[in-house]
Image 1 (cartoon, rainbow, N blue to C red):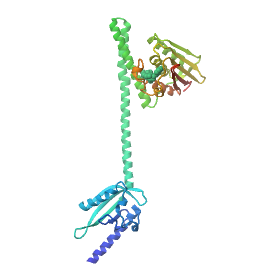
Image 2 (cartoon, protein in one colour):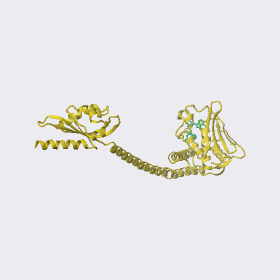
Image 3 (cartoon, protein in one colour):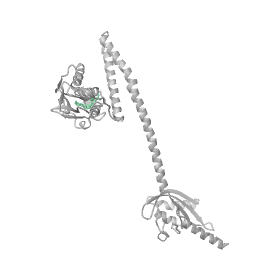
Image 4 (cartoon, rainbow, N blue to C red):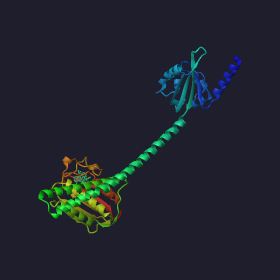
Length: 372
Ligand SMILES: Nc1ncnc2c1ncn2[C@@H]1O[C@H](COP(=O)(O)OP(=O)(O)OP(=O)(O)O)[C@@H](O)[C@H]1O
Ligand SMILES: [Mg+2]
Protein backbone atom coordinates (compact mmCIF):
# COMPACT_ATOMS: atom_id res chain seq x y z
CA UNK A 1 0.00 0.00 0.00
CA UNK A 2 2.77 2.37 1.03
CA UNK A 3 4.65 1.41 -2.13
CA UNK A 4 1.55 2.25 -4.22
CA UNK A 5 1.38 5.65 -2.54
CA UNK A 6 5.03 6.27 -3.15
CA UNK A 7 4.59 5.24 -6.82
CA UNK A 8 1.58 7.55 -7.20
CA UNK A 9 3.46 10.42 -5.60
CA UNK A 10 6.39 9.87 -7.97
CA UNK A 11 4.06 9.78 -11.00
CA UNK A 12 2.36 12.89 -9.78
CA UNK A 13 5.73 14.63 -9.35
CA UNK A 14 6.73 13.68 -12.91
CA UNK A 15 3.41 14.88 -14.22
CA UNK A 16 3.77 18.25 -12.51
CA UNK A 17 7.36 18.61 -13.58
CA UNK A 18 6.43 18.09 -17.23
CA UNK A 19 3.62 20.67 -17.36
CA UNK A 20 4.77 23.40 -19.75
CA UNK A 21 2.01 25.97 -19.67
CA UNK A 22 1.96 26.53 -15.94
CA UNK A 23 4.75 27.36 -13.54
CA UNK A 24 4.12 24.89 -10.72
CA UNK A 25 6.48 24.88 -7.78
CA UNK A 26 6.64 24.45 -4.07
CA UNK A 27 7.66 26.95 -1.41
CA UNK A 28 8.79 26.11 2.07
CA UNK A 29 7.04 27.79 5.02
CA UNK A 30 9.31 30.83 4.67
CA UNK A 31 8.65 31.27 0.98
CA UNK A 32 11.81 29.70 -0.44
CA UNK A 33 11.50 27.71 -3.65
CA UNK A 34 11.80 23.97 -3.02
CA UNK A 35 10.73 22.44 -6.38
CA UNK A 36 10.57 23.67 -9.96
CA UNK A 37 8.90 22.44 -13.16
CA UNK A 38 9.44 22.89 -16.90
CA UNK A 39 6.66 25.47 -17.08
CA UNK A 40 8.29 27.54 -14.33
CA UNK A 41 11.58 27.48 -16.21
CA UNK A 42 9.83 28.45 -19.43
CA UNK A 43 7.79 31.26 -17.92
CA UNK A 44 10.24 32.67 -15.41
CA UNK A 45 13.55 31.89 -17.15
CA UNK A 46 15.41 30.27 -14.21
CA UNK A 47 16.75 26.72 -14.26
CA UNK A 48 15.90 24.61 -11.20
CA UNK A 49 19.47 24.71 -9.88
CA UNK A 50 19.51 28.53 -10.06
CA UNK A 51 16.32 29.10 -8.15
CA UNK A 52 15.80 26.33 -5.62
CA UNK A 53 16.48 27.77 -2.19
CA UNK A 54 15.80 31.38 -3.28
CA UNK A 55 12.93 33.41 -1.85
CA UNK A 56 9.95 33.78 -4.20
CA UNK A 57 9.86 37.58 -3.74
CA UNK A 58 12.42 37.80 -6.55
CA UNK A 59 9.61 37.01 -9.04
CA UNK A 60 7.89 40.28 -8.08
CA UNK A 61 8.71 43.77 -9.32
CA UNK A 62 10.19 46.01 -6.59
CA UNK A 63 6.95 47.92 -6.04
CA UNK A 64 5.00 44.78 -5.05
CA UNK A 65 7.77 42.56 -3.60
CA UNK A 66 6.78 43.71 -0.11
CA UNK A 67 3.42 41.96 -0.43
CA UNK A 68 4.89 38.43 -0.52
CA UNK A 69 4.80 37.87 3.23
CA UNK A 70 1.17 38.99 3.37
CA UNK A 71 0.22 36.63 0.52
CA UNK A 72 1.74 33.66 2.36
CA UNK A 73 -0.05 34.72 5.55
CA UNK A 74 -3.40 34.79 3.77
CA UNK A 75 -2.74 31.42 2.11
CA UNK A 76 -1.68 29.94 5.47
CA UNK A 77 -4.77 31.29 7.20
CA UNK A 78 -7.42 30.76 4.50
CA UNK A 79 -5.93 27.90 2.51
CA UNK A 80 -5.55 29.80 -0.74
CA UNK A 81 -4.52 33.14 -2.17
CA UNK A 82 -5.16 34.22 -5.75
CA UNK A 83 -3.92 37.33 -7.49
CA UNK A 84 -3.21 38.87 -10.88
CA UNK A 85 -0.32 41.25 -11.39
CA UNK A 86 3.05 41.99 -12.93
CA UNK A 87 5.91 39.57 -12.35
CA UNK A 88 9.55 39.75 -13.40
CA UNK A 89 11.45 37.14 -15.40
CA UNK A 90 15.07 36.25 -14.76
CA UNK A 91 16.31 38.78 -17.34
CA UNK A 92 14.14 41.58 -16.06
CA UNK A 93 11.24 41.60 -18.54
CA UNK A 94 7.76 41.71 -17.03
CA UNK A 95 4.77 39.49 -17.66
CA UNK A 96 1.20 39.61 -16.45
CA UNK A 97 0.53 36.65 -14.22
CA UNK A 98 -2.33 34.86 -12.57
CA UNK A 99 -0.92 33.23 -9.45
CA UNK A 100 -2.51 30.89 -6.93
CA UNK A 101 -0.79 30.04 -3.68
CA UNK A 102 -2.19 27.01 -1.82
CA UNK A 103 -1.34 25.99 1.68
CA UNK A 104 0.13 22.47 2.20
CA UNK A 105 -0.54 20.90 5.55
CA UNK A 106 1.26 17.90 6.99
CA UNK A 107 -0.45 14.81 8.46
CA UNK A 108 -0.73 16.47 11.85
CA UNK A 109 -2.25 19.63 10.37
CA UNK A 110 0.96 21.63 10.61
CA UNK A 111 1.86 24.02 7.81
CA UNK A 112 4.66 22.43 5.78
CA UNK A 113 4.81 24.79 2.82
CA UNK A 114 2.94 26.18 -0.19
CA UNK A 115 2.21 25.14 -3.75
CA UNK A 116 2.29 27.94 -6.26
CA UNK A 117 0.76 27.84 -9.72
CA UNK A 118 1.47 30.74 -12.04
CA UNK A 119 0.08 31.37 -15.53
CA UNK A 120 1.46 33.89 -18.00
CA UNK A 121 -1.54 36.00 -19.10
CA UNK A 122 0.39 38.75 -20.87
CA UNK A 123 -1.08 37.80 -24.22
CA UNK A 124 -4.62 37.64 -22.85
CA UNK A 125 -4.17 40.96 -21.09
CA UNK A 126 -2.93 42.57 -24.32
CA UNK A 127 -6.01 41.20 -26.10
CA UNK A 128 -8.25 42.50 -23.29
CA UNK A 129 -6.62 45.89 -23.46
CA UNK A 130 -7.02 45.97 -27.22
CA UNK A 131 -10.67 45.02 -26.87
CA UNK A 132 -11.24 47.70 -24.22
CA UNK A 133 -9.41 50.30 -26.31
CA UNK A 134 -11.45 49.36 -29.37
CA UNK A 135 -14.70 49.55 -27.40
CA UNK A 136 -13.69 52.95 -26.02
CA UNK A 137 -12.83 54.18 -29.50
CA UNK A 138 -16.13 52.93 -30.89
CA UNK A 139 -17.97 54.62 -28.06
CA UNK A 140 -16.18 57.91 -28.56
CA UNK A 141 -16.88 57.75 -32.31
CA UNK A 142 -20.54 57.15 -31.58
CA UNK A 143 -20.56 60.05 -29.14
CA UNK A 144 -18.78 62.27 -31.66
CA UNK A 145 -21.41 61.36 -34.23
CA UNK A 146 -24.16 62.31 -31.81
CA UNK A 147 -22.41 65.62 -31.09
CA UNK A 148 -22.06 66.26 -34.84
CA UNK A 149 -25.76 65.64 -35.31
CA UNK A 150 -26.66 67.92 -32.41
CA UNK A 151 -24.37 70.60 -33.80
CA UNK A 152 -26.01 70.38 -37.21
CA UNK A 153 -29.39 70.69 -35.49
CA UNK A 154 -28.23 73.68 -33.49
CA UNK A 155 -26.80 75.38 -36.58
CA UNK A 156 -30.16 74.77 -38.26
CA UNK A 157 -32.06 76.29 -35.35
CA UNK A 158 -29.80 79.32 -35.02
CA UNK A 159 -29.47 79.78 -38.77
CA UNK A 160 -33.10 79.58 -39.77
CA UNK A 161 -35.47 79.53 -36.84
CA UNK A 162 -33.79 82.45 -35.07
CA UNK A 163 -32.86 84.54 -38.05
CA UNK A 164 -36.21 84.84 -39.72
CA UNK A 165 -38.18 86.22 -36.72
CA UNK A 166 -35.29 88.57 -36.13
CA UNK A 167 -35.45 89.92 -39.65
CA UNK A 168 -39.19 90.58 -39.11
CA UNK A 169 -38.21 92.72 -36.12
CA UNK A 170 -35.67 94.69 -38.20
CA UNK A 171 -37.98 95.11 -41.18
CA UNK A 172 -40.94 96.04 -38.95
CA UNK A 173 -38.98 98.61 -36.96
CA UNK A 174 -37.52 100.17 -40.11
CA UNK A 175 -40.96 100.36 -41.69
CA UNK A 176 -42.34 102.20 -38.66
CA UNK A 177 -39.42 104.63 -38.79
CA UNK A 178 -39.84 105.20 -42.53
CA UNK A 179 -43.55 106.02 -42.21
CA UNK A 180 -42.55 108.90 -39.93
CA UNK A 181 -45.73 108.64 -37.86
CA UNK A 182 -43.95 108.12 -34.53
CA UNK A 183 -43.44 110.68 -31.82
CA UNK A 184 -39.80 111.56 -31.16
CA UNK A 185 -39.52 109.37 -28.08
CA UNK A 186 -41.15 106.41 -29.85
CA UNK A 187 -38.93 106.91 -32.90
CA UNK A 188 -35.87 106.73 -30.66
CA UNK A 189 -37.08 103.52 -29.05
CA UNK A 190 -37.91 102.03 -32.44
CA UNK A 191 -34.50 102.97 -33.82
CA UNK A 192 -32.93 101.28 -30.82
CA UNK A 193 -35.00 98.15 -31.43
CA UNK A 194 -33.81 98.08 -35.04
CA UNK A 195 -30.16 98.56 -34.06
CA UNK A 196 -30.30 95.88 -31.38
CA UNK A 197 -31.97 93.42 -33.71
CA UNK A 198 -29.36 94.16 -36.40
CA UNK A 199 -26.61 93.57 -33.88
CA UNK A 200 -28.20 90.26 -32.89
CA UNK A 201 -28.44 89.28 -36.54
CA UNK A 202 -24.75 90.10 -37.00
CA UNK A 203 -23.80 88.05 -33.94
CA UNK A 204 -25.87 85.12 -35.19
CA UNK A 205 -24.21 85.12 -38.60
CA UNK A 206 -20.77 85.44 -37.01
CA UNK A 207 -21.47 82.47 -34.74
CA UNK A 208 -22.69 80.48 -37.72
CA UNK A 209 -19.54 81.35 -39.67
CA UNK A 210 -17.41 80.47 -36.68
CA UNK A 211 -19.15 77.12 -36.18
CA UNK A 212 -18.93 76.26 -39.85
CA UNK A 213 -15.30 77.16 -40.17
CA UNK A 214 -14.05 75.76 -36.86
CA UNK A 215 -16.12 72.62 -36.70
CA UNK A 216 -17.25 72.10 -40.24
CA UNK A 217 -13.90 72.06 -42.04
CA UNK A 218 -13.33 75.59 -43.33
CA UNK A 219 -15.34 78.32 -45.06
CA UNK A 220 -17.02 77.64 -48.36
CA UNK A 221 -16.75 80.33 -51.01
CA UNK A 222 -18.32 80.63 -54.45
CA UNK A 223 -15.84 82.53 -56.61
CA UNK A 224 -17.03 84.45 -59.69
CA UNK A 225 -15.62 87.28 -61.81
CA UNK A 226 -15.65 90.20 -59.38
CA UNK A 227 -14.41 93.78 -59.15
CA UNK A 228 -12.97 94.48 -55.71
CA UNK A 229 -13.26 98.26 -56.28
CA UNK A 230 -17.03 97.90 -56.64
CA UNK A 231 -17.20 95.87 -53.44
CA UNK A 232 -15.16 98.43 -51.50
CA UNK A 233 -17.16 101.39 -52.88
CA UNK A 234 -20.38 99.73 -51.79
CA UNK A 235 -19.15 98.88 -48.29
CA UNK A 236 -17.76 102.39 -47.81
CA UNK A 237 -21.06 103.93 -48.93
CA UNK A 238 -22.87 101.80 -46.35
CA UNK A 239 -20.43 102.75 -43.58
CA UNK A 240 -20.76 106.45 -44.53
CA UNK A 241 -24.52 106.38 -44.07
CA UNK A 242 -24.08 105.01 -40.53
CA UNK A 243 -21.09 107.26 -39.70
CA UNK A 244 -21.63 110.49 -41.67
CA UNK A 245 -19.21 112.29 -39.35
CA UNK A 246 -16.20 110.10 -40.19
CA UNK A 247 -13.61 110.86 -42.85
CA UNK A 248 -13.31 107.85 -45.17
CA UNK A 249 -11.09 107.85 -48.24
CA UNK A 250 -10.88 105.29 -51.03
CA UNK A 251 -8.36 104.88 -53.79
CA UNK A 252 -7.93 102.01 -56.28
CA UNK A 253 -5.68 101.07 -59.21
CA UNK A 254 -7.50 100.64 -62.49
CA UNK A 255 -7.64 96.83 -62.62
CA UNK A 256 -8.46 95.19 -59.33
CA UNK A 257 -10.66 92.39 -60.61
CA UNK A 258 -10.41 88.72 -59.80
CA UNK A 259 -12.35 85.50 -59.35
CA UNK A 260 -13.69 85.80 -55.83
CA UNK A 261 -16.82 85.40 -53.73
CA UNK A 262 -18.39 88.84 -53.82
CA UNK A 263 -20.51 88.55 -50.69
CA UNK A 264 -17.69 87.07 -48.64
CA UNK A 265 -15.16 89.72 -49.69
CA UNK A 266 -17.73 92.42 -48.86
CA UNK A 267 -17.83 90.85 -45.41
CA UNK A 268 -14.02 91.06 -45.12
CA UNK A 269 -13.92 94.71 -46.19
CA UNK A 270 -16.86 95.55 -43.95
CA UNK A 271 -15.23 93.91 -40.93
CA UNK A 272 -11.93 95.71 -41.50
CA UNK A 273 -13.48 99.13 -42.14
CA UNK A 274 -15.87 98.59 -39.22
CA UNK A 275 -12.89 97.81 -36.98
CA UNK A 276 -11.01 100.89 -38.20
CA UNK A 277 -14.01 103.04 -37.30
CA UNK A 278 -14.76 101.31 -33.99
CA UNK A 279 -11.27 100.67 -32.65
CA UNK A 280 -9.21 103.45 -34.30
CA UNK A 281 -8.85 107.05 -33.14
CA UNK A 282 -12.31 108.51 -32.42
CA UNK A 283 -12.23 111.27 -35.02
CA UNK A 284 -9.35 109.86 -37.07
CA UNK A 285 -9.32 109.31 -40.83
CA UNK A 286 -9.83 105.87 -42.31
CA UNK A 287 -8.44 104.99 -45.73
CA UNK A 288 -9.01 102.05 -48.05
CA UNK A 289 -6.52 101.43 -50.86
CA UNK A 290 -6.49 98.75 -53.59
CA UNK A 291 -3.28 97.96 -55.46
CA UNK A 292 -2.84 95.96 -58.65
CA UNK A 293 0.08 93.58 -57.97
CA UNK A 294 -0.10 91.59 -61.21
CA UNK A 295 -1.22 88.10 -60.18
CA UNK A 296 -2.79 89.42 -57.04
CA UNK A 297 -4.59 92.42 -55.63
CA UNK A 298 -3.76 93.95 -52.27
CA UNK A 299 -6.22 95.70 -50.00
CA UNK A 300 -5.00 98.10 -47.31
CA UNK A 301 -7.31 99.37 -44.59
CA UNK A 302 -5.67 102.02 -42.45
CA UNK A 303 -6.74 103.98 -39.40
CA UNK A 304 -5.07 106.45 -37.10
CA UNK A 305 -4.72 105.88 -33.39
CA UNK A 306 -2.42 104.33 -30.82
CA UNK A 307 -0.75 101.03 -31.62
CA UNK A 308 -2.60 97.83 -30.82
CA UNK A 309 -0.92 96.60 -27.60
CA UNK A 310 1.96 94.20 -28.25
CA UNK A 311 0.31 91.52 -26.11
CA UNK A 312 -2.90 91.66 -28.20
CA UNK A 313 -1.25 91.71 -31.62
CA UNK A 314 0.01 88.10 -31.99
CA UNK A 315 -3.41 86.59 -31.26
CA UNK A 316 -5.54 89.24 -32.91
CA UNK A 317 -6.87 86.83 -35.57
CA UNK A 318 -7.81 84.18 -33.02
CA UNK A 319 -11.52 83.74 -32.28
CA UNK A 320 -13.06 85.66 -29.38
CA UNK A 321 -9.96 87.76 -29.06
CA UNK A 322 -10.86 91.32 -28.32
CA UNK A 323 -9.56 94.09 -26.20
CA UNK A 324 -11.29 94.53 -22.87
CA UNK A 325 -14.36 96.74 -23.13
CA UNK A 326 -12.94 99.39 -20.84
CA UNK A 327 -9.91 99.97 -23.10
CA UNK A 328 -11.68 99.92 -26.44
CA UNK A 329 -14.52 102.13 -27.58
CA UNK A 330 -17.74 100.79 -29.10
CA UNK A 331 -16.77 97.26 -28.39
CA UNK A 332 -19.93 95.25 -28.32
CA UNK A 333 -18.62 92.63 -30.75
CA UNK A 334 -17.76 89.04 -29.99
CA UNK A 335 -14.18 89.24 -31.21
CA UNK A 336 -14.91 87.05 -34.20
CA UNK A 337 -14.59 89.63 -36.99
CA UNK A 338 -10.86 89.20 -37.66
CA UNK A 339 -11.00 85.43 -37.27
CA UNK A 340 -13.73 85.27 -39.91
CA UNK A 341 -11.71 87.65 -42.14
CA UNK A 342 -8.69 85.38 -41.88
CA UNK A 343 -10.75 82.27 -42.69
CA UNK A 344 -12.42 83.95 -45.67
CA UNK A 345 -9.14 85.28 -47.03
CA UNK A 346 -7.59 81.82 -46.60
CA UNK A 347 -10.55 80.27 -48.44
CA UNK A 348 -9.57 82.55 -51.38
CA UNK A 349 -5.95 81.40 -51.17
CA UNK A 350 -4.86 84.78 -49.77
CA UNK A 351 -3.20 86.17 -46.68
CA UNK A 352 -4.06 88.78 -44.09
CA UNK A 353 -1.64 90.64 -41.83
CA UNK A 354 -1.51 93.67 -39.57
CA UNK A 355 0.99 96.39 -38.78
CA UNK A 356 0.42 98.76 -35.91
CA UNK A 357 2.59 101.50 -34.43
CA UNK A 358 1.87 104.61 -32.37
CA UNK A 359 3.20 106.89 -35.10
CA UNK A 360 1.74 105.29 -38.23
CA UNK A 361 -1.50 103.90 -36.81
CA UNK A 362 -2.90 100.51 -37.80
CA UNK A 363 -2.96 98.92 -41.26
CA UNK A 364 -4.57 95.61 -42.15
CA UNK A 365 -3.26 94.18 -45.41
CA UNK A 366 -5.06 91.52 -47.43
CA UNK A 367 -3.37 89.94 -50.44
CA UNK A 368 -5.70 88.06 -52.74
CA UNK A 369 -4.50 86.02 -55.71
CA UNK A 370 -6.68 86.91 -58.71
CA UNK A 371 -7.84 83.33 -58.91
CA UNK A 372 -7.94 81.21 -55.79
N1 LIG B 1 -8.19 98.72 -36.73
C1 LIG B 1 -7.99 98.40 -35.44
N2 LIG B 1 -7.39 99.27 -34.60
C2 LIG B 1 -7.18 98.95 -33.32
N3 LIG B 1 -7.55 97.79 -32.75
C3 LIG B 1 -8.15 96.88 -33.53
C4 LIG B 1 -8.41 97.13 -34.91
N4 LIG B 1 -9.01 96.06 -35.43
C5 LIG B 1 -9.14 95.17 -34.41
N5 LIG B 1 -8.64 95.65 -33.28
C6 LIG B 1 -8.58 94.96 -31.97
O1 LIG B 1 -8.70 93.58 -32.22
C7 LIG B 1 -9.83 93.03 -31.54
C8 LIG B 1 -10.44 91.90 -32.37
O2 LIG B 1 -11.08 92.41 -33.52
P1 LIG B 1 -12.31 91.64 -34.12
O3 LIG B 1 -12.77 92.35 -35.33
O4 LIG B 1 -11.92 90.22 -34.29
O5 LIG B 1 -13.38 91.68 -32.96
P2 LIG B 1 -14.32 92.89 -32.50
O6 LIG B 1 -14.24 93.99 -33.49
O7 LIG B 1 -13.98 93.20 -31.09
O8 LIG B 1 -15.75 92.21 -32.52
P3 LIG B 1 -16.56 91.70 -33.82
O9 LIG B 1 -16.69 90.25 -33.60
O10 LIG B 1 -17.84 92.43 -33.80
O11 LIG B 1 -15.73 92.05 -35.02
C9 LIG B 1 -10.73 94.21 -31.29
O12 LIG B 1 -11.55 93.99 -30.17
C10 LIG B 1 -9.75 95.33 -31.07
O13 LIG B 1 -9.29 95.30 -29.76
MG1 LIG C 1 -14.55 93.62 -35.56
